[in-house]
Image 1 (cartoon, rainbow, N blue to C red):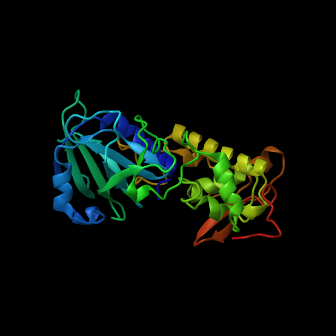
Image 2: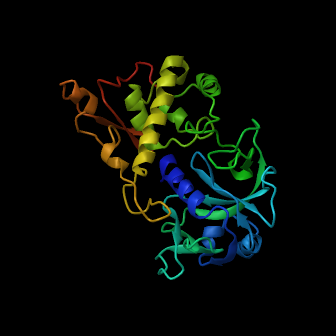
Image 3: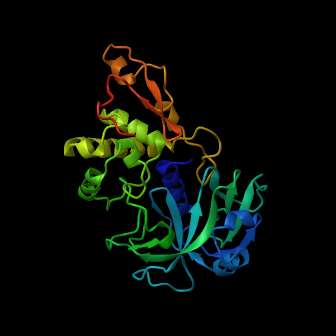
Length: 316
């Protein structure tokens, strides 16, 4: 499943290529990709016809395009958004109308002309776990901008209102995160995968950040000192910022940006997927310690037994 850097790469592409343009036609080729819009595909098409895509916004792994109809006061936030849930294999691609349809094209949005830019936004989804739907925009509980965007509107889709801010969000509060973290009685990796506590961190980047912070995934949250929690959050920020610079972590052709280019950050991973290989930090210090793999929540966790010793009071 795509993680925060992949979604942010897509958001930036949409902000450059799509924001400010009007939807002039909608072609729903597979209604299954609009199943989250409960009124149905015909109602979705009707709502979108003539709508202006005012911005591209992201909170955690949630991505949305605020909609306006007709003239809009930029000081007044929109009330509706087009949500794009990428699921396991969803892609949003900007293409010229004369480009052949992708094999798994599900929804086509025809856009108003804009300086020679490609005229279509396409939602492609091989496994059909993702989809597009409309969600009302509601005020943010903290009164701050909803997420990463160009317009600082203090609204968030109702469908994403339960999602916490992510560590790359300028409005992310470490104090609030640490306060809530200390109330948990679970392992640290399980906690940072909880999108209601801190969003955008998936399995890959959790392992990378924990390795960088020298913390075992089963370290109890209620024993974590403030300095250790700061080290972990800073590691999350660093690993995701580096992934953004590299275009994301793409292990196959499914995870691409709006121009169809895959990321390549997997070449720089220090922990994830490296079971049986030397720990890069130990190797740099002249010691060969092999990384280990443990089962975790029907997935895997990768750690260095020297850099990240398992705590005696481990919690999974």
